[in-house]
Length: 90
Image 1 (cartoon, helix red, strand yellow):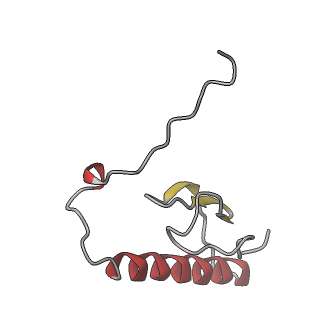
Image 2 (cartoon, helix red, strand yellow; image 1 turned 90 degrees about the horizontal axis):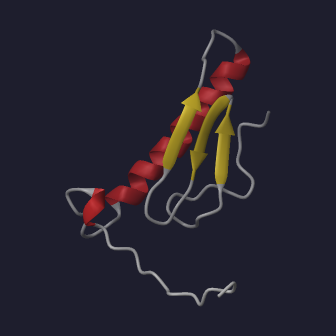
């Protein structure tokens, strides 16, 4: 399984990009990034590549957060704009 994401994983840039490393999945979002699953790292080259890919992604996430001018103390304080959509069934 490739250690890179398709499409490119740019933290907080979209609600579609997913990166998979072993059984660990990182789901991108404009408001939050969700990590779930697990990642086994052994003493082998494949694990080294996965660890490098994870470190690169986490470094990009930290950099994106550090670039924010006014981060709230908690994510539940973030207000995401919503759009009301007409019910197509009613």
